[in-house]
Image 1 (cartoon, rainbow, N blue to C red):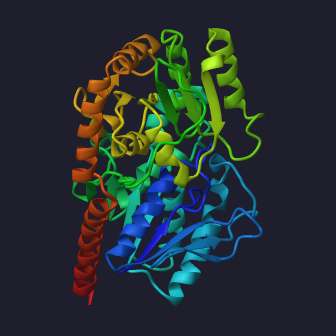
Image 2: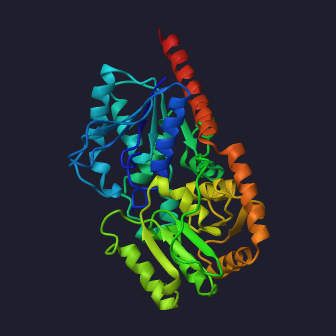
Image 3: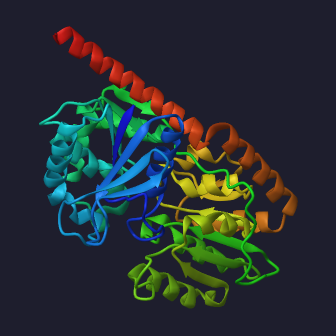
Length: 402
């Protein structure tokens, strides 16, 4: 199939760890490459945010990234991109009128809006993955939610009009049904993870007798890194490495400064190191350098980092929310704790840091679970099945119309 994937703000070419560069970027890149491995031709459309970017950049065999000229060619926070989606969609329609994709898969709500705009001019089978829902974000962040007011009504419309909504976790299905999605259009396909074979642990930082905890991901408040820092006060012999954050202006980033102030106030700054954004190549070695990986968001639509840790045979201590309820088996591949509770987190981390045999057992079980359920090849095959279903249904409808 000729597959068009649209990811308006999350480019598969981006450096990870910034405010708007995280799991979705990884998901889009890996899924596109895995679909190409199955023999499909994939184009990923993302907004041009740099004047020097070429229109077409190869990502890998069978996959090209297409930079769409919608809005000024500079970095813009994703919550300010809504106004450029009509232009994004019109550009897609113009291109697709010349060579129509056989299926279109939108990632995030604004990509869905761009695809819906394009669909006014040209019809195509249309799948949607939200990656996060505005109603959930508003529930957890309240007045701190910076999403534009158009988000929730747009997601409600998209959940109903698209041919398939591909949720990444069971909890998301319940939210989508409450939004009015048609049950027959809903599918659950998890995110996947690389198996990271042949990599070794990254050396450096410290070698604390109490062990190393790693927090990896975007540095935004809802990821709960402050909970991990607070837990360190009860783990006096352990160290914490925090990887993530913007690639530029790291020292002046508001969240970096907030977390550092917290570490200073709690007296743990000498055992907490914020190392900034990391490349994909650095991730497996960084994970293998840790004794335990802490993933403690307030909410999490899916969460790739827990899977990456499990793929590296590292135990996860995670929040019992969202996608982690599907991926982390409590007491088998890791330990689940309530979000925003540093005391409970410290108890779980401390128990694992003091018990190498339990860490080994949980880590091996996690690696086995990932290999059985969460490879990108498996995820691509499940996604392909959804594509086949909606393209077949569209063909039947068109045939009846004729």
